[in-house]
Length: 132
Image 1 (cartoon, rainbow, N blue to C red):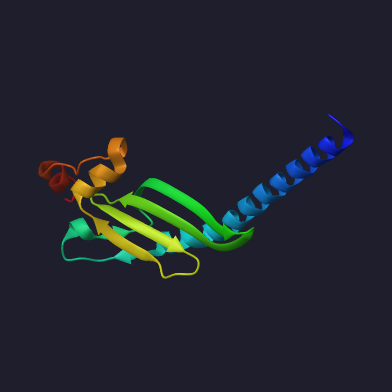
Image 2: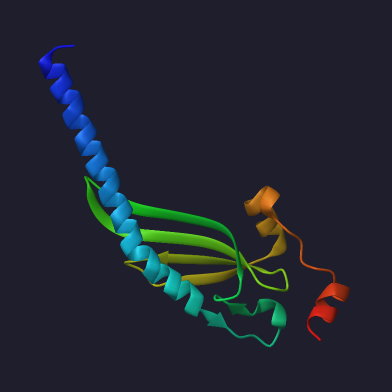
């Protein structure tokens, strides 16, 4: 390999490392905001199955992405699927340039989305004894 080839390989490596470091830093800056929003979310419902407390739910799946075009970061996105104590699933979507979304997911959809990570809700007997 000649000096030009070595120089191009070194330059490519430096640019790639710089890009990876910038993306990691961008995600870290926005992750704490998304985490605080998630933990502060609270949905009260007359039906206890549909109650959501972000601080105590079990996170089943986490997807994080920094969206960018031509090296310019557009938005940070965090998507989660969480499960409350009664076995109901919720979809959480945070994006820096959009309103936060939280939606209930019915059991059949949760089973399809989560595949092997899906857990059915506890039986009525377990639920009643845990709520006493």
